[in-house]
Image (tube, rainbow, N blue to C red; front, top):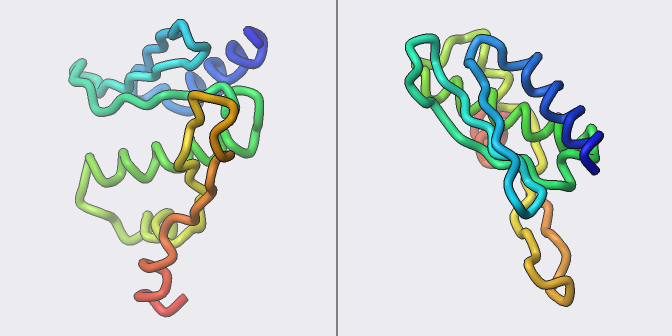
Length: 119
């Protein structure tokens, strides 16, 4: 598991070099990522779930959600970034603590925005 975790951390480090990423390994196997601006102000924190550490697709979805959040935080939305908000991204909405619980539900982000845009 640690090799997948290390690969995910390395991948995120390379993608977010402008935001000074910091990583903290949590006892449950997840990884907390803090992104800071060049002045040192924390912009956001996100958790990299174990499933995201082992799946390139899920990790890429997390990266895209973080990029969208950063665009929102840094505002105003530039014309060339509109496509990021029109793209379908799967969101994982349930993390079972007990294996007897139902599996994760996948929802699609941005459907309402795409419908309003006419695309």
